[in-house]
Image (cartoon, rainbow, N blue to C red):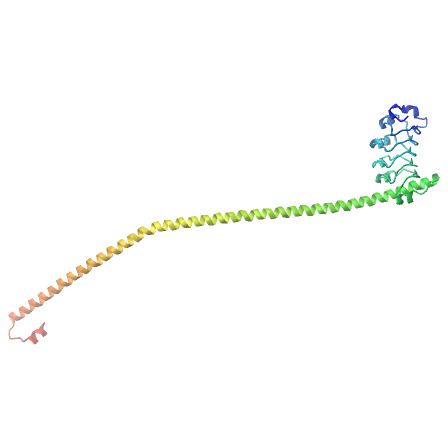
Length: 285
């Protein structure tokens, strides 16, 4: 009877609310929703089967407040990571499976007061906490110590995760700072490049303006030079004409003076009252 689809679960439900599915050669857990449909189920016995794993929705059994679960003598290698959500669980039998470790969520089974982990290849630390579990008292102690152990492991794990998260945040912050620094560097390089281009354009503009001004000044100075040359030439001509005129005036004045001297001399000579020698005449003049 290895096929779970052929099971009529109702036929395996006892009056005390225990669903006894043991020794049925089951290779997997029956459909969880079918089990939940049996509203009076409070205890499930899946022992002495060939079950290798529990389904992900196994924790839905919490809806029925399952308090006892027997999974002994199966082939389980691990429990689901969310197994701790079965918070109503008080008794758990995992005897004779292939489990080496328990999920961290196991620490959430705060109501658990009975746990059997015998005949499992447990890790050494977990085995030391589980003990031998040869009677109910030892199984109660097993539940207590394993809960303490898994709680401590969970706290250490959360602490490690917090440290990892902090390191990750620090690294991300450092990376963000590095990216921002790189972006700032790129912005500064772009700014300097724009500034360099602007300065280059400004210098080119000034150079063009200077060349334009030089050309304008050159064009303006050529007529001035020509005017100065013309002006200098005219002045030379005027000076030359003035020289000629001065010479003419000097000649006229000299001629006039000579004429006056001759005239006066003649008058003296004509009107002299007594003879005059040359020396007296010179003095007279």
